[in-house]
Image (tube, rainbow, N blue to C red):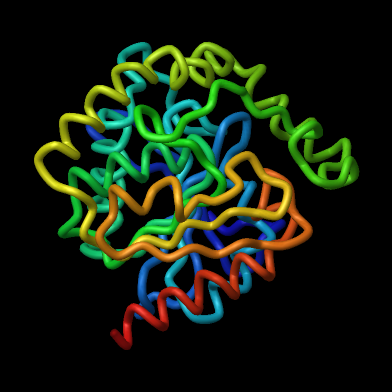
Length: 260
């Protein structure tokens, strides 16, 4: 159905291995597909400021992971390889064969595992300010206002939006399940990397005041074709804080790799 608060986009629910994932889709149907995954305590709405700019060139799909927003909250495993399989199933159900995958925070946990499992489906991978289980993950859990550069990044309505998602039945349980299963995610990442490194192009986006000072340095040993970018004047929540800079960085990355 059309979204009244984001012109040109519609939302739907997609069956992903018998789990319903919420998808918001818009942009250019014949353009390169860009799939967006949000992070802890957020939903697809985290990308709302960047989606219109991306939609000028690309077929944009923002997916809610298991536990996010209107997506289902199953009681089984939330290790990132299991969740990655659901994401890939959802993208396949949306009739997208190959795509660019862009992800922030816990979304980047899932995206990294997805890239290890389904490299042939990706044109490239962009990860925003995230430690990866078993690779670079620090111990802190992000909090909305504490990890944004400006305390006014999120107004009360936006905080209420995310709080409602967590307060929904099973919301907090499912949100924390990614941390509960982080050790299993780390083990599976190690096993996969022993077989093969990432070969798809990877853009590692840090911010001037984010959680991971140099994404490129931390992940480059595990990727054959990795580049880095730093978004200035941003904390951890880069798509919320500097959406235009995110659109510019992603567009330049896709254009460069497409020409290459």
